Length: 219
Ligand SMILES: *[C@@H]1O[C@H](CO)[C@@H](O)[C@H](O)[C@H]1NC(C)=O
Ligand SMILES: *[C@@H]1O[C@H](CO)[C@@H](O)[C@H](O)[C@H]1NC(C)=O
Ligand SMILES: *[C@@H]1O[C@H](CO)[C@@H](O)[C@H](O)[C@H]1NC(C)=O
Image 1 (spheres, helix red, strand yellow):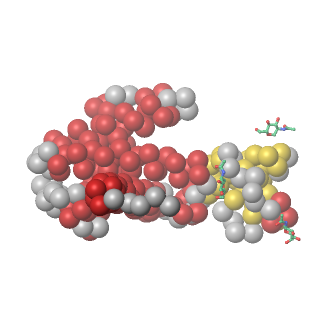
Image 2 (image 1 turned 180 degrees about the vertical axis):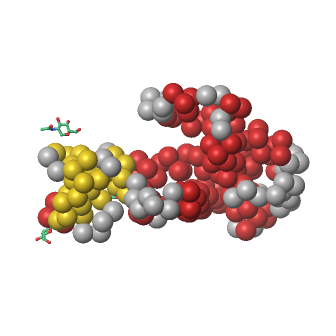
């Protein structure tokens, strides 16, 4: 085996320190996104239920439902998506006459239960929010109404880009023409990112100040 000279060792040490720092800040950022995505989904469920107290489920098509065991689909039901067989857990359904079509009840699933395609949506929204919030706190921006609107618009624009193929025409409006309740969804993503930035003490790892929100929260 070749002897490691002190110089190589020092270079190696320097390299690994930088590497550790890089990975750990990347990991912190990943944790930040995960927490924001999960809280954003929980927050959406809460708002959805309080705005529509009579709606008990919201089944949506998923492209990742093949791993469910077919013999667990036992309850025949008519859902908003059509005639289905519902899984024992009541959170997954299959079209009665075509078992390759699977729906999941996103209203009754925690973030961790969501299939990858639906978790992906939340995660992307969270990623844009986290990136913008971190960038703004690093630039020492004032977290006022104006900044909330700027970031919410960016979150919305990124959403359009991902969903242009399936959004209804009403939602393809530019941000400023959206109804307030639609804008609130994007604002909440941003505000959740601000709150969690402080709660997870991320300002320590990213060496910034905590975020001081000037506007009252609408979460
Ligand atoms: C589908 O979901 C399962 C279980 O949640 C997961 O392990 C798998 O990676 C997913 N596959 C795809 C293609 O998304
Ligand atoms: C599906 O469930 C049935 C009945 O509970 C069981 O016998 C079978 O092994 C399961 N199949 C798989 C692939 O898990
Ligand atoms: C069942 O659904 C799949 C996916 O949408 C589709 O590709 C397939 O043609 C359907 N099968 C039948 C028999 O309708």
